[in-house]
Image (cartoon, rainbow, N blue to C red; front, top):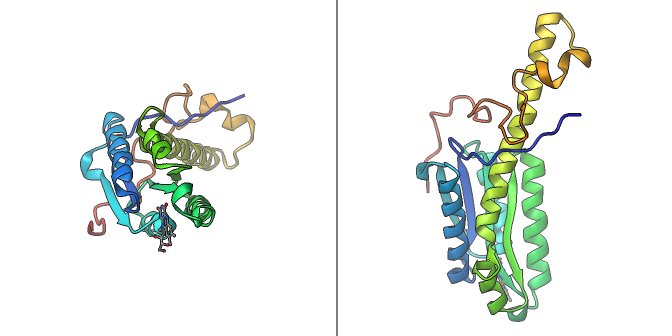
Length: 209
Ligand code: RBF
């Protein structure tokens, strides 16, 4: 049995944060939490871009554009939706959640959900950096873990292709974890070389906004 887990090493990772301005005071705390987390996990400040959208409903649109640009290893959607303040709560929350999930599925770039849904402003505040932690921080950590897990898959594929080239055909026995150059011996190790997820010709990033 082999077990894989994405490491929490964010060095060299390029991350897009898509943040909703609605309830901005609280969302800013989520953004701060996410940026703090990425820095602590080794991301370079230069590799983190923040895109602001009007409300959580618009997060999937910008998240899809960021993920599709090829400039990022992961996208983090951040927003605050308060039930007490809007009858649109369910519509907006559902659209934000399913939209962000669709970005990940459609692009293969991890897209994580850091939208706080709360009954009251007080509850929202608790999840944006006080009593109940900071959902932005947690979302950033999930994003890094998923990027590295994705690289573990790519490491396996690359290793299997290599073995196939060398032997003519890779059998199940030949692709055991021990013989995989890219496989993670330890669940906490990233399986593929750092930067394996970067697009070819990364030098030409599109301009920041
Ligand atoms: N956006 C949020 O991120 N959080 C909210 O709590 C929120 N409440 C809204 C309530 C109403 C009645 C409306 C019309 C919009 C709300 N929005 C909220 C904004 C929404 O996400 C979106 O930006 C706008 O509907 C424009 O598409």
